[in-house]
Length: 427
Ligand SMILES: Nc1ncnc2c1ncn2[C@@H]1O[C@H](COP(=O)(O)OP(=O)(O)O)[C@@H](O)[C@H]1O
Ligand SMILES: [Mg+2]
Image (cartoon, rainbow, N blue to C red):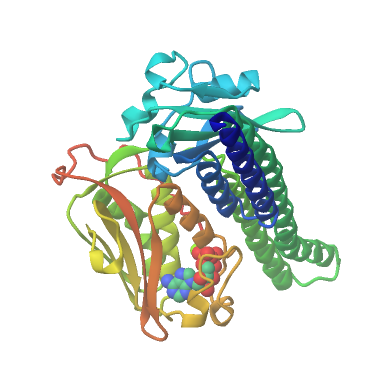
């Protein structure tokens, strides 16, 4: 009697699960935003397997390496910091064997790669990992971690999670393809303008009757447009890498104040051309982040503050400890670049970090691609940090971002910069 009852009950539970799975697959197919999609998959994984946490790893198509892309129990920075070796990790095993793995006690499984728990404060007791594949090729792994109330795992759990992973793989591939096609269309569109200018210039230059003064102007235009093409292609590549998740952060502990000083020196000459003063304030706070990428962000904010400033204006750079009123997470630094420029209307502020967005009223004032801030945002978010701005039309703008703070190293750095780059990326 009892066993019949259990069978009927488990049958109903199974049916309910499959119905839920159907609803979830419709949801998965309705979004092409990769970030949102990964969150949906995590939620679905914990819900369907009745577990506490879930994580998702994707394989880098060019290097074949596995990388955590989403996890309910880790921050972005933690995910970046965890290596997932193909030959000595559970996820690596699942991908290379294309088979699910159920580990009822991780302490007793040699494939379990303990670096995850060492890097985070999290304790994994048990987990189920299933492969995601598309067109018969592995693309990643979905993991459901720690059964709620330490319930036993069942074959249903394995089947349901595998069914979810199959749906998820298709949705992830679609989102990736969409991202690429969308971006390629925009990119080609942007490349056409400088190319058309170059084409027109060469045609003009071929006229034998062209006066010398005009010839000089045309050559200057050609130089500018060539420069623009060079900047565009670099930006496109940066952004494409960041968007596809192929960018790896190379984090190190560095002196943020010193980096600000270094960046202001790079742009100093350009500021002086417009009689703009730059000042830097703040202690020698240290951050744990990718120094080169943060430098790219600061240089973009600084060049913007010069380009969209008034003649004889000012720029104030600062590094401070977090200010909770502004919604900074605890334990972080706040870096800011404030200018006395045109300011940005509230309506435009909402689009500031979109690709190719440039404020119409000021687009003609300075050259640019409209990609600098989109790139900056992705770099900062890849660190698990935030970027934002406050601005008032006619008064000026402050851009700020947060960085992971490394406490207790406020002494000035003894080592002087070995080399200062004098090339100043134009955004
Ligand atoms: N400090 C600023 N003050 C006013 N407007 C700004 C400022 N920074 C950026 N903007 C506006 O935001 C747009 C996008 O900036 P960005 O992505 O760096 O592109 P770009 O500098 O290539 O134009 C700029 O074109 C400009 O209209
Ligand atoms: Mg810029």
